[in-house]
Image (tube, rainbow, N blue to C red; front, side, top):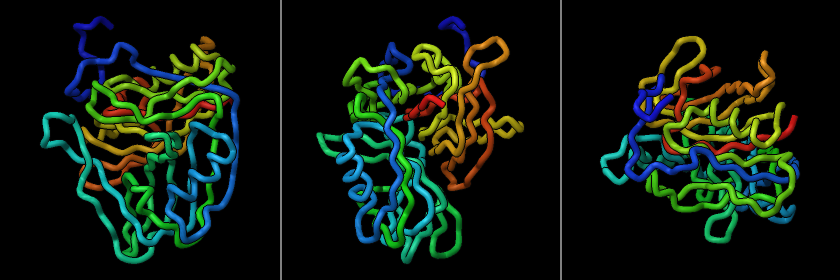
Amino acid sequence: MSALETPPFATLAQPGPVRPERWLAAGGARLHRAFDLAPGRTLLDAVAGPLAEAGMRGGVVHLAGGSFSPFSYVMPALSSDPLFAAYYSETFRPEGETRLERASATFGERDGAGFLHVHGTWIEPDGRRRAGHLLPAEVVIANPVRAEVWGTAEAAWRVIPDAETNFSLFTPVSLSEAKAGCLLLKIQPNEEIHAAIEAAARTHGLSVARVRGIGSIVRPAFADGRVIPTDASEVLIRDGTVRPGPDGAPVAHLDIAVVDVAGDIHEGVLRRGTNAACITFELCLTAA
């Protein structure tokens, strides 16, 4: 496709200069951990401590079960400020105990300390199912939450300013030349996410891989024909894979949950080739 052609999917103009590299990746040997998060600690402290002790510098954390109180989150929102193409809603703090269904978190570093970027689905005290972006330094574990982590000590996620979006975002940084059994992958705005995953997998020799992580999509398009008319969204990957296609080239398959600006949750398999990143995608590809 030439620079003059319109892509066959929705995009969202960003405020800053387009980054020449449309995806960035760094990897190393795979580490895997599973543990329970004990009550009484913030989500950030409960996750960051054990991972730092394990020497992990970047990865993805799957969270399931348990509950939180207090609980704080934001949802996606359109931006009234021209400095940003999309932004966040006000902060919501439901009273009582919120039960976690599932969440996915990017684990890395901000200003030299451990940090998390978390998207999830949960049941609030009023019984309503909701989804969005958890605030990990404010969320406190009430009942044990199960954590499973895939990551590496040889590449890091670091929060770095991104001129294209005007946000500071997790960006993969290589710490060694090790072969990537675990690949940290950032996708830039308006890049088709399947194509970027497939290109990264091909470049780094991951013909078969699991794909885990979070991000945002402009007007998500599902394989069953649904198209969600929201420019801002929060996404978590429920199940993701890379497998060889008929010609042997990598093919990505992504089953997601996404919340729109109205707070509605949409779930299912994405249509390959028609879903562009909104602000970013933060993914962890592990050799299967």
